[in-house]
Structure formats: structure tokens, C-alpha cells
Length: 431
Image 1 (cartoon, helix red, strand yellow):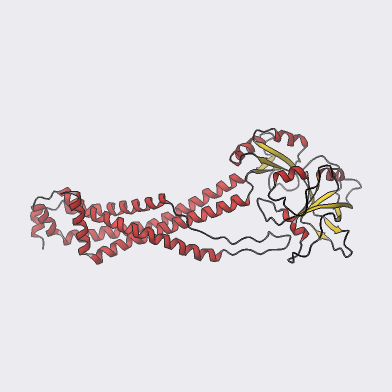
Image 2 (cartoon, helix red, strand yellow; image 1 turned 30 degrees about the horizontal axis):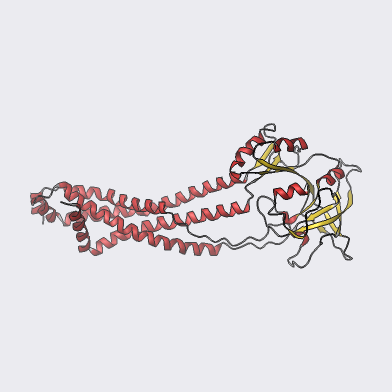
């Protein structure tokens, strides 16, 4: 029998049993809907997280920390020679060092009623190099980057300059004179006391949030050379590296780590962290799809049950077909074709319903992801609302359709073989 006739016969048989066929197809629809819905939603969530992390982290920046990330204060420090060795690595665009000064108290000398503002972090940097490493974050609200040879200037972060919710309340403007109270450690003469120093505000930074692991909104910056003079040291606490190609950041980090003794430095590579999170989310997505696939397997058991009952009901019909010359493989093909049509129809309907389900779930889940509003200088700044948009993949759609057809055929194989092996004489006698 020709393939077209087998296909037509299978379709007519399904049309004669509309209710049974519809219920069987519905079970396939539910399975494919769950798979497509969860797959597209999981993919959209994964891409949203990855995009946010890529936009939040400077992928071309590496952070070198002496010792372990959780080693506390007892750490080695970096020297100018360390900076030079790192700068010589192929692929490194620029390396600059940071000296952590600690919490300080600021007074605006230009204001009559000046209230102190305690900055969250005070650091000493080379302004020119630091601005090249973080060009997107060194955007000025007022003033500009100081000249390289000026050693009495400072830059103030947004939240230090606007310590309250009222953004019109401004602590300082460009060219204001700021008195900075520093607490000198016991190792610095005259040994563990507070000392006041004056700086001129070169500029104040715009609000930039928290890209990467640091938030400059809560920082003040003073010249590195000035801090070295105050603290009698030539060492620094951190090194920031800017690379030419973010894709090579892991290789560059490994080469930089080899410049130091084992376990003496920790290098934070944003791309590595993002890739790890991406792998975890991919595993979660596959897990969700595996759970959804269970419903399709349950549908397969239902197909086997329905097809077995169908063979019993159509025993005489099968006997007649075989009596007039139909071969066993023809009967087998007829029943498998019915199962294949159920898989195709149910899969196509399930795909479209899965798209709708994913949008519905995305809308519901997006409502639970609310922005955070935190405005004290000891907390992270407010974040934008995260919108989860389903991502539809042609590959996943094809895989789901093929999976539905294969499941239907596999579970229909036993009743189809049973029908093909029927003895025509016994089948004609069957009541």
C-alpha cells in the first residue's frame, strides 16, 4: 500500500474516533506545552541574568587582591615593581594600584554651618590611570579630572556628595576646600592619632550604581602620591587591570597569578563568574525541561493504552485487510502513522500554547521581582525592575516536536506489532 493511502487511512481512522483521538492528543499537547513554556522561560531568564551581569560588570577589568579574598587585614601588599610586571603581560592595556585609606570624616570649609560627612570608603589612586580603567564610572557631575601634577585635589562620589534622599542637598562643589580627618595607624608618626588635611574638590561624580564588585558612589578619591607621603609607605592594597580583549581575561589572570608566589594573590575575573552562573542556569533549565518531559511520558502511556484498546476494537477490520492481501508491515505502518499524526498535531498545538504559557508565567514572575530602594551610604543603591522575557529557540522547538513524535511512536509500537501479528482467520472470527 502506498504511503499516501496509509496516511489517509490513519487520518480517517482518527476522524472516526474524534473524542478518543482528541483526549489522546490533549495529553501530548500538555506535555509539549510544559516543555516549550519552561524551556523558553528558562532561556529568557538565563539571558536576562547574563545581560545584566555583562552590563553590570566591566568584563575588561580584573581585580588583584593580595592573599585570599577572606584573609582579613593580615595581607601582603603590592609594590610598584608588581605593577610593572603585570603591565608587561601581553594583552594588558593598563594596570593601576589603589591604596585603601579607610573611613574618613569630611568638612566643607566653604560652608558656615558645616556638618561632617563620614565617607564609606576613602581611597588613594592615580587619577589619570584610574579614569582610564573606569571611563564609564568616572563621569563628572561637577568639575573635571584634576591635572596629573596636582597633589592637593580630591574627587567625591555621588552618595558622599548627596548623603540624603533629597538630591538637592549637596555637600560640596568643584573648587570647594574640604578638610579631611584621617586616622593615622600606630606605625605612622606621631603614632595612632587623628590628623587633618585639606584638599580642593576637583570634581564630583555622577550616580553610576554598582557595576562590578565596587560602588564608587560611596567613595572619595585622593591622590596616591599624597597618601603615600601621609602614611609613609610605597605599597598599595589593590591592583586594577584593564585588558584589551575580555575573552582573554582568564588567560591574562592566570599569567598575572604566576608572577606571585602560590596563594599570595586572588584575581577576580568577571567573565569567569558570569560563565559559572550561566552554566548553573543552563543546568537548572535542563532540569526543568526534564520535569516537564515526565508529563509527555505519561501521555505516551496513555497512547499505548488507547492504541491497545483500538487494536481490540478493530480486530475484524484488521482481519479483512489481511485477508484481501494487506501485509503485516502495512498494518504496522497504519497504527504507527496514527501515533505519528497524534504526535505531530499535539506537538504543534503544544508549541503555540507553550509560547502563550511562557508569556503568562513571565508576566506573573516579573511582578514578584520588585526594585529595591536603599538609600543609606551603608547599603547598595536601588536597582531596576527585572523584566523576564521568554526566549524562543528554533532548536528547542524542533527537539520538542521530534521528542513528541518519537514518544508517540515508541509507546504505540507494542499495540501496532500486536495488530500486525494477528492471524487473519482468527481476526475474522473475533466478535
